[in-house]
Length: 113
Length: 110
Image (cartoon, rainbow over all chains, first blue to last red; front, side, top):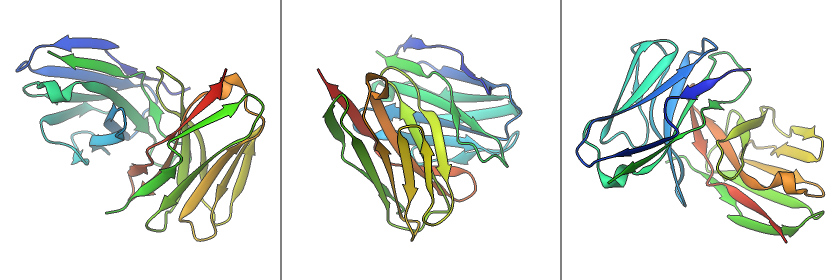
């Protein structure tokens, strides 16, 4: 089974801190995604990457950046955390030619105080 | 922009009753996927539908993709407590992205 591992399950950070959320997948998938999930707003795409060093903005990229230096790792960076970035962050991956859907990590619940 | 509307937002059922959630897209979809998210969990892929009019079954779950490839439904027969969670549809956008419905939360009445 594909495994997508997110480094932290829960995280509490202070306003203005730089925050790194890490995601690693073990199935050589080309495509990786970062979402945030908020009650009533569903899943919103922040950034995605279809190859190493490649990145594309999703629907809500403001306040975030990403890094994909290796195929298996996709990092989400909050340059200066704000309280409105308190959310559940979900990483997902998918193979390029797969008929299967996305495989999600367990999520990181980030609280910015 | 492209949207996928999913209804209802919530559905309360007695255990043993059926459950249905519907998705409608403003544009034709190349495929549609369905996911289940248990309370406190993450979305888990259930199935992908690709062909116009396609119907697929997984035990008590029946998935349909409309003839025009703009709508889809998930029907669960005789719900069980293990079915509790939120069901999401997601339509393919371009080569990489999905457009997500808002989800339907299945709640079993005590």
